[in-house]
Amino acid sequence: MVLTRRLLDYLFILLGVVVLTLLLLPFRSAFTIANVTMIFLLMAIVVAVTRGTLPGLWTAFISFMAINFFFVQPEYTLWVADPREVFDLIVFLAAGAVAVRLGAHARQQTETARLRVHEQAVLYRLTRTFNQLATREDVLNALMEIVREEFAARQVDVLPDAAEAAPSDLAVHYLLLQAGETVYATMRAAFDKPLPQPRIDLLNTGVAQAAMALQRIDLSERARKSRQYEEADNLKTALLHAVSHDLRTPITIIKTSASNLRRLGDALPQTERQEIAETIETEADQLDRLVGNLLDMSRLRAGVLRLSSSLNSLEEVAGDVAARIWQVTKQERIKIAFPDDMPLVEFDYGLLMQALTNLVDNSLRYEPPASLVEIRGDWHAGEALLKVVNHGETIPDDVKAHMMEPFYHGRDGHIGLGLPIARGIIEAHHGALRVEDTPGGGATFVIMLPYKEEAPVEAEDPGG
Image (cartoon, rainbow, N blue to C red; front, side):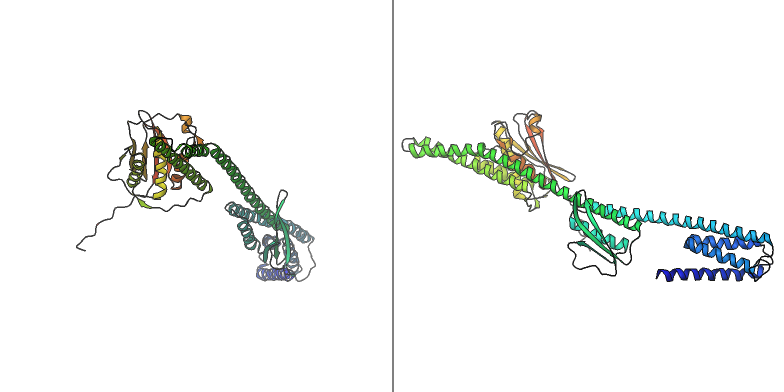
């Protein structure tokens, strides 16, 4: 097929020289031999630039023969009467060969530049595509698609997952997707004809980029698993520490109190038995809260927390938390202050109530008996604020930096889980939790929740 196309090119060139000769014959008496040779030389250069060196030389040769036969005296013969015209013909042939070579070189340079631009476009597409992918399957599928589109591959697959063998009439290339010492796969690409070396080099470069993308994904997965193992190990260590100290303390108190009731119950006054029973109940509640916090922290760390959000009132949440504190303490310890135009906010009612309860419990632990913990509401464009104000001691800056970290040991020596759980719940709502100093002493926890400001609804005109 290639040979046939080449022969057709030579025949068309011969036809072109014949046509040009026929066009010039009526004017040969008006043209000098130099004029004629320049016209034929221009044709040879055009052919060399468009078709290549050999077609250009073929054009120069048959032009030389046509000039000699039709335009040099004596006409219609290859004999040259004037020796000076022999020199002209020889110069034409030499100039034609040089011009053809220069024209072919310019064509080659143009083709090389075009190939370089195409290669850069293909490599840019490969780089941009691979940088956006995060799985091995996506990288391999993208590579096979690009090879089909950019290299006109008839069949592309990845070994050893290929379902069928490549056809025997195609030129098959096998390329390793290898980065460093690791071979991730072997790509098999089949083409109608063997690829030229520049195309093979470009294909190898694309496969190398795919291998580096696979290596990046592999390293990222290893790093993620390593972080998971490290976090799991840290969680395990913290849980063991909690079990060894914070869980054992209420268990010991409960066991001791229950043992005293069993051995000395009849000998103890009714008031002491009542106190021991209340101690058991209090420590059991403390144990229940601690175990619940440990489970909640495990859920947050595992990323399995699921929100069931809807439009709710932050003031109602604050009221429910205050009611719970009243039921437990039988004292009024909470003051609530909200503006009249406080908007509704989308959140998970139960989870946000748990977060606010943790913050209030922490604030009550350090609130002076003569004052009240305040829950204040506020809002501005796009953000609703819920503040828990404590009037006790101001928290040092070094404590602020760590008090919301899981398993941080507070000033009382116990691990802190309530604040980290509250922060995790609020961050799951795409909000934030920060702590500020209360003017005059104390700490203020600020919950910031995003909300969408509803556009006002215009009333319909009754008149239509």
